[in-house]
Image (cartoon, rainbow, N blue to C red; front, side, top):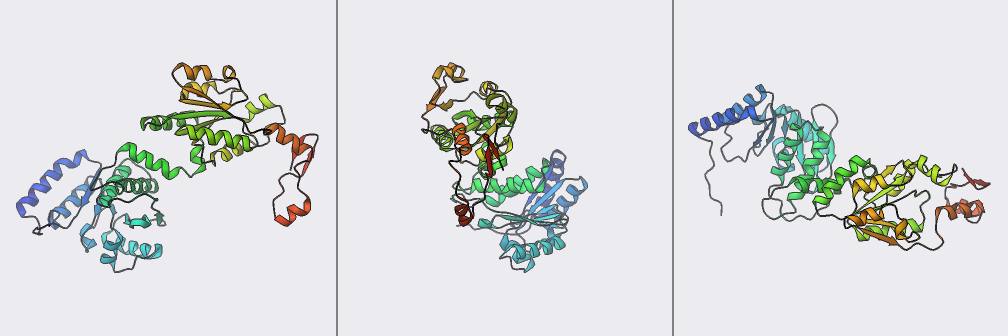
Length: 391
């Protein structure tokens, strides 16, 4: 039972609040006006805070509970939920178009630079004064308790914007932070590591995010290790993906928490395999590898052997095909020296890129023209001559 008296702060209390605010303002880069309509943010306190913050050039975010948005005139960002903006503007907000219309009306009322509308399971929408609106969908996550989600969102948004993060990225970060706390019981906080993991999950489906330099890889690996993840590593040319590759990657990922693939660059492949290789360039090969759920990160290397990567990454598990003897695996001795493990994965009989190219050259894999036409399949190989792949 929550029994309370809701009334504006007395003149004495308002004076104490404005004095404390003025003293704290110089040390802040952002101001959050979290208005629960209980009386603390009376008009005297609210107007004084906005005036002082604007004069000092501070970022001001207001999370409104009042149906009168004109009380927040002059703030930088207003963050109502769907019900609050509907109540304040009278505009239905059942879809993106409705949210955008209500957001424009709210901008007129409060003269803010942007309105961020939280939409529960539908994510959030940002309606800026200048530029087109954009929408951030919510990510699938178990919802335990929605208490504090709005507070977390506005806090994360303020922090990101104060750090000069672009608004689109700040909105994604704030949405991810809110997604973390709804998965916890009661009013909870979100830590930096939890937020990093949530953002990693959000970007996990983006293929380009899974291709990076060694320096980028080391930063991510440090975060993964801090969370207790076991790091696996394998390497190769991965020119034409075949069942043997799939088996290697799948079995390797089953043994570790994160799998890093070192990928030979084009120049490296040419030195190893000859001038006619690779069949696919490094960008194409990296993209195909990154599309596998089993692969967490792809890192290119220009050397013929991946020792530089292995030394820097220090994987917990090193994977290679079982056609290698343990003593012949590059980096195997190094990994074992600090307690890591070398894992030899049985190969898929008869599968290799070299054999695949040889079969193509011999015409054994070419489908009849009629079948290709009937099935509507794109013909990727038009002609093979002298063992060279064309088309």
